[in-house]
Length: 565
Image (cartoon, rainbow, N blue to C red; front, side):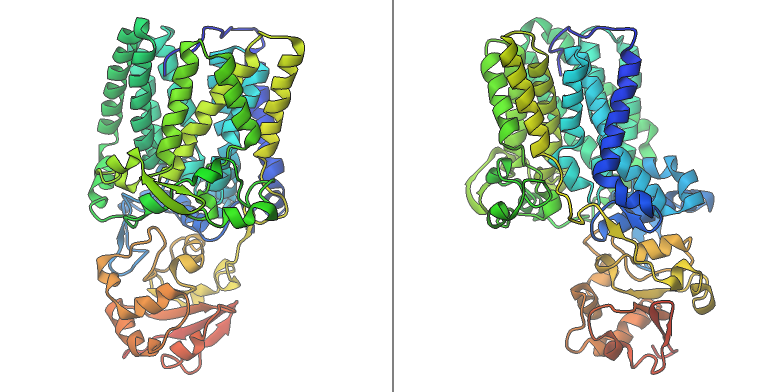
């Protein structure tokens, strides 16, 4: 991104204001998401459903694998005895290693809560630093930082995707590019710092790094045309950025090779890139995760594709009005058309390969041209809203920092901006960001040591993504293995054709389940079955042939598998 203005000023209290901004965002994160968690930090976590348990598993897995000399890119703990390649799944190695002391001392739930509460606060703070560089205004940048860090994108990903919610490096990378173009960073320093940020981003989310490279490259091309006088330095910066990416990839070559190797087996269904797209109405109509997304809009929001956590296109009427007002008041400035061009480009891309309006599909869109390309075919267009909110944050902060106009006009701008913040607030009284730990006492109190042999392969019910068995395993320090996992929606080939997997994947028993049970247990060397008490379904009937007298202890029903399976 090129320099949009030269208003940045160094003041004696700049660091104090920067620290104050971070404290404001941290307090906002705690107030909005952390109060239920702080009461019971090891028993309640920020998130929704079972996705957070997967990332808690990874928080424990990386320090466990490294300390035990295991290959961190492959595990036998899941989908045992076959195992599973972890290169192409969102394993968050960077946060896992950073939080390792907390994870090992206090457990994966506490570590996950710290990570989750940091995501909006730190992301807002780095966006604040970018906006302050652009505008020189502390107050305007506070608003811009909040728009980014507490956007509907952040609300959605905070439900269970910390790899996507931790977006703090995106504004930092844009800031580095901006400083290189305006001449405040030397080429060598820029390449080193950018390579460091690229490497760190790869260790947080390869998906974000990939889409950032795509949209960042397009933004730089657009900048070269928008600012002809700086075209040379912009293109030089683009070339230096590529050098930085190459350096980061060389340093992290083992991880990158693992990612590329495992992408040969699709980590998600191919239709996801067409299903998880933004609905045109979602730009204006909120879904239930926002304060304004009440029953009045429920029927419309129900038509949006994807799930509630991926319906992140809501900008709100006040923010849209602010963006339009900026377009009018700055219409003669190149920077305005550049920023608006970037915003429009991202908004069109987030609609996906085909336009959806209220759930109804219509015309084909430009993203159709790239949706099948290598790597990009795994990108979910709804998640591109990350970049739309960053562009909107910079635009709004510029608009607020503009000293032109009468006093009433400036006050009206601030009033509209504050309304935009209110319109994006998360809903209260819903459990989108509060989920209780359901680990049975059988695992949390150590009872499993008496009934499961070390490293034994035990089938857990609820199965895979229907429950949080990965968290149970992580909390025991990987004391047992499981013929299941929820690191991807696609099972290993050795499991994919098993008839009993259909029963397990349905979440409830189906006709003739028992007929396929023995084959599954023998094929995958299962020694025990652990059913959490109260799990819906007639599981007792399914597993009764295994063990007519199962042990009921610690909130589970334990079935031993005999020699005949």
